[in-house]
Length: 351
Image (cartoon, rainbow, N blue to C red; front, side, top):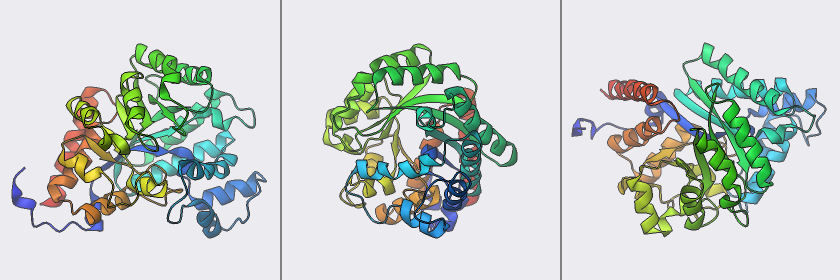
């Protein structure tokens, strides 16, 4: 890239217009407040208030929470309204609609189907409902989507294996990867090694939440025990230079979520986030929302936060966005196609 764009002023509006990806976004953390209120009313779920503004106050983190565990507690409320096919379909559709509205061209939505079984829905029904919602949105908006099925660190590894089998059964039908989410401390990824072996043995991608609330050892396990193709967060990777070099050399993408990392106190402040260090070290960093509702953010907000905090140049912001397109869990030829398209669109907007 030449320096033709060095004087380009990067505004929030400019970032909004750019084509983007969101590779790390949780379905159950990304509902519209109005939808939570509406579903709760229809399903007779008790909420302190059914006013969308109050629901938003209740569910969106204001400032910081004590730790990741406290952050995860907010999902109890969103999950309570996501126990029917209709609710899941609607949540998936609206998430894709909201993403498309800010020019996200490709999004991978993750969730754990076992958390939606309180009313007895079977796993296939749950996966089908989400895929239906996303596919409906794809027909109407300029967005492509994929689903990532999550195992959960704190549940029995046999359940993770069952979820891995579920992911494999949807290979080529909309599910693009398997993930391990949840509280890291005391729940090592290597306990779930059978699930990851099953997924990789069937040539399916995997990503793991690691190094968010626990040190580099967690990232080490994710890569060397579980064979992660991407790392969710990776905030603590900075503490192990040798591992950092390995991640860089192998082009293992990091799914960075700035706002949520500050909220969960994975980093003491936004200024202390290693994002810029990783970028300058040539790691493949991507930016993502994590949870649009619970973190009160959008992709445009995440990029804008990065630009304001780390004074990113046009070249750097382009690199981060294109890293997203390089890191999508799509077949190579399709990945090349959407990458080239996005690149052309970015430079056209910048000219």
